Every structure is written in structure tokens, then in C-alpha cells.
Length: 149
Image 1: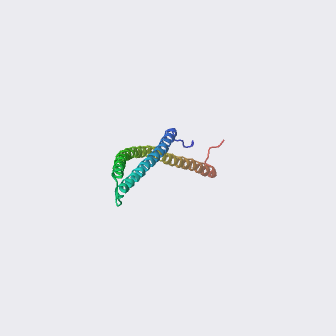
Image 2 (image 1 turned 180 degrees about the vertical axis):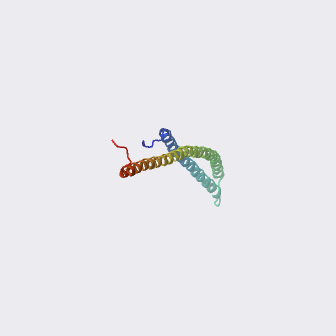
Image 3 (image 1 turned 90 degrees about the horizontal axis):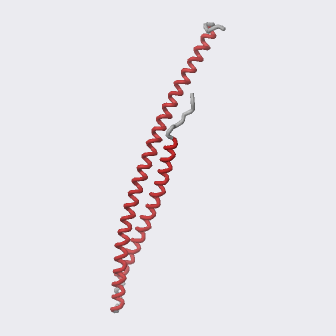
């Protein structure tokens, strides 16, 4: 009996490569989301610190500068929040694509496994039949019932 071969092996390899690419893209999206989140947290810390510095005497110029700085930080916070939300949406898309790629690969791997199992069962049946035929031939030969030349 011939050796087992899975006819869809190239497709399985393609899907495995597609899954690896999706893992990489998801990882990059995760890193981007984390970077944006850390930048937002830094801005929020600076914004909280900017409002607390008011215990000493302040001149009008200092108050104006602080107000402008707080306005600038608020604008940065808003931009960074929208960037974090966009990065999170991108991350969710990459996660979904990774899940789909993984499912596609696993479907083919299950098919390959089932076909291999069926091949092994057929191989065992074939080997049993060959062994039975050989045992029968040996039995007839020992008893002298075999075909004579």
C-alpha cells in the first residue's frame, strides 16, 4: 500500500503561514495600543500635576501660562484618547483575523488527522488480509493441499 499523503498539504501550509502573519500583526497592534495607552497615562499624570501647583503666590503671568499649559494638555489628552480608541479597534480587528486564521488552519488539520486515521485503519485491514492469506497458504502447504507445480 502506498504511503499516506495529504493532497491539501500546500493549502494547510499556506493557512499556517497566514496564521503566523496574523499573530505578528496582532502582536504589533497590541504593542501600538500599549504605547498609546502609556502616552495617555503620562499626559493624564502631567495634567493632574499641573492643577496641583498652586500653594505659592502666583503672578498673573504664571496663572496665564499654567492655564495655557492645562489647555494644551487637555487637547493632547483628547487626541491621545481618540488614538487609544483607534488602536483598540485595530487590535480587535487583528484579534478577529487571528481567530479566523487559526480556525481555518485547525479545520484542515482535523481533516488531515481524520484522513490519516482512516489511512491507518485501511493499512491495518490490508496488512491483516495479507497476513491471513499468507497463513492460509502456509497451512495448506503444510497439509499438502496446495497447488502442485
